[in-house]
Length: 462
Image 1 (cartoon, rainbow, N blue to C red):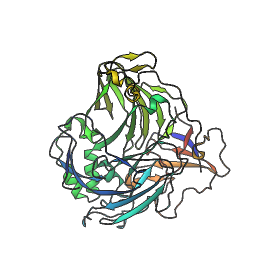
Image 2: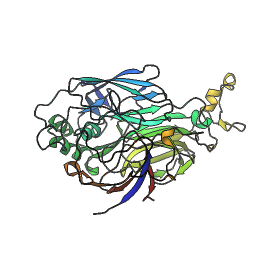
Image 3: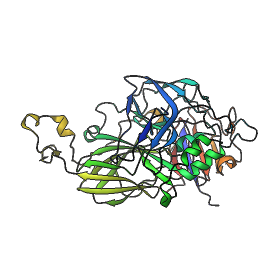
Image 4: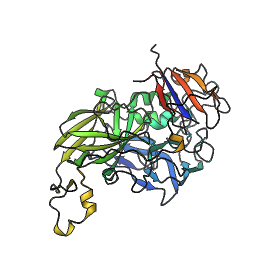
């Protein structure tokens, strides 16, 4: 067994068919602005989709009527009110985690809740308490205040019920959540860049079918049986915005802001990589997991090892006419085609592409600013909120250093030798303001994730 460790610290519509198989140009999720309407209804229901895997369309569970679900945007200080309606019907023959001996096994296929992944929000109901169970045919009203000092960034929302999370995530039930940037808070080329939300999802069909049958989820298992294609890749597909191997057309020389979410559910990183780069695309990192980096722009030229649940913001520019092929999980995933725009004249004063502009539009700064070709300006936030202050140089609080050994998978998973139990069963207790140091062992056997409080790796990594 390979043992690896790291040390970290922190401060305390069923009949609808959605088909993408005949449309290769990438499409983007619908946007719901919670500032304009902070009370939204999010339905969890069966949806018939055709991502282009081969075979007949199949049914899966979806959030908000699409895979992925709509992108929710809000500003710091917004109170997000979500009426979550579980419109599924219970499968009487499916297994329940309440059955004797099945607590840490797959089950509860039609039970769900919501987790606001990455948000620095309360874990107390009616906010982000993942122990909540919303039964089939029932609803729950979440009230989730995002604090005034919440850092802008990309996060996501997904079901997180113990026993059925894998079933729901492998079926595409996830959506992006963006905390908005304040006006005039970013460099001009970032603020004016066209934003592209890219949700990557891992469809490991054989594993999903196996999990579904272990859970007694015959409705989903039989639906997956209709997928006929992809035998050459072991029927493990990667989709972008619910589409299999789409094409994304961009204008040569123009910066875009890509907001990438890997809505993954297994332990492998996405490993996003440019297999070919005829278009001369460059990726400059702006933020990781909803947190702006301090050394922007940071060029990324190798594999992007985005972990399951991970997010990254990049400024992207393709300098040549041509195509660039991206792979993820070693599979061809996305083709970027860079082409000339009708606007090609370079304004030497502003570094803006602006040719073929009608005389009456030459003062249209919106048109000009949309075509930024200048180099990026180094930048970092003027300040970070209290919950994101660095703890790299801070010693841990007395009594707050503990080992955390991860071992096993599924119902064999152990944390410090103990199986998961809900309720008042704690591995470690602390207090607000403490500096906690956790020494992780076994991170190659099981991923590590914690809610509410971000953490920093302080040793044991490359």
